[in-house]
Length: 168
Image (cartoon, rainbow, N blue to C red; front, side):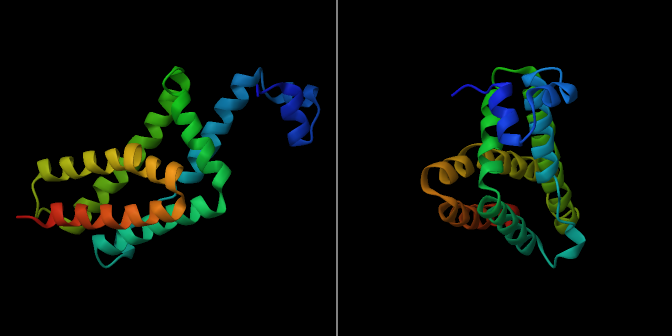
């Protein structure tokens, strides 16, 4: 079903004219939507508020799980926009900013909790694994098997990540 200004206006409870008063075209509406979704997901947990990286991972996983429970349309829209990023440079730039922000925050947390006790290459490897989880396993478990499966996958992933970081 194609998105039209008439359908969108009806869903939003505004006229087509009002929609075009605020946006030049439907693509501008989509770009505004992806930016709004991204800002919703950018809240980060401050590492200093946690005893260790394990508790940090538990809270960030629970936060994502709760977002999936409370904002299922937002999660599905985010994954949809991620797919559109394959074909649209503006979506790609937005999703790249979002992804980089998340990876930067996980890097910051690892550096905070491990404070020079592990080499940079190990942190870099851990961040690549985090990225792969969200792009692959997280998406697959969420879409194919539901939010509870995602929670189980996150717990298993967290333990694997902790094991990798704690190896000397």
